[in-house]
Image (tube, rainbow, N blue to C red; front, side, top):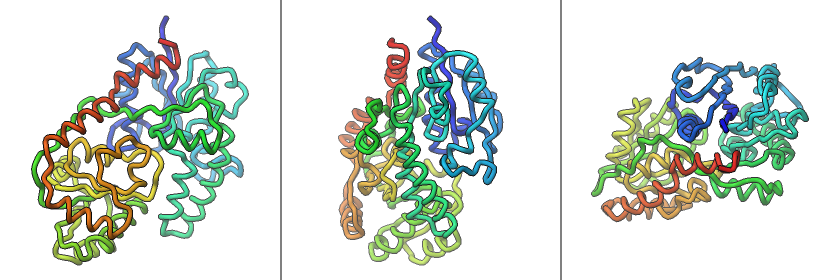
Length: 377
């Protein structure tokens, strides 16, 4: 029996140039290798058509995401309403193949009675209403705060309404699965690890580096807030070299990073420069203000860096807790920084990472789980 699967992605999943598309893209190749004929449906709002996707898919269709305020809705969250598309729904109704929706963003069809008896599967990237709560708290703009707050409220209503409609839901963390079971009485959700590049192997260097490191898109409010907190509350009187790196930092953050002799910032490094800094650093310091989903920068640090110091929000429910050092206050971070800076990274720690990460992020095994869920094989 031939296996055909519609996959709807919230964006064009190539090139793989930011964390949000890793799971989308590498799932395609993993499923193709199990004999699945993929019919891909992408929402394009700036990334353009990508011929590379034709290597993994039997067909690829592109749809325009509606802009604000054309997609304004009093009932649907913006991330859903902007991807409500009649042409997509008509295309999906031409056959009865199962449908995988990548993210709450792509799940509008669950509200359409025409799909009530269809096999439908939802990949949950975040508990979205919680994610938007965190965006609200981190936003510096009043307009952004109002938008994020409203979106969070709509998402809570929407996620509750659709939680038991798919045939199955696959979360990226155990914590997100628990939240759906507890808050929405969802009985069809299971944890399924991220799909990562097959080239990713644990490649950390033993011994000691010379600096502590924080990386992230520094134009994002939550990342800028974390970076600012580290500079003002942790490295204000811990005189250990600290490097920040990431996209588009504000002038205010650049000035703050260069205000002390032992701290600095690298703006807009290329991928090669970033990976070199990841590998050479002695310690990754990655506090977060969001405890939903999984942070790809943490995975990058665990695969390629040395010590990882995080807070509970960064790692809780990810299954990666045993590979990290955890602190939850400025005092706790200061103490851990001083302790770990004197501690070499060992072969034993690398072996521990290999044992856990290679088993958890096994694309072949995880693609087989999807096959078993959809086709029973």
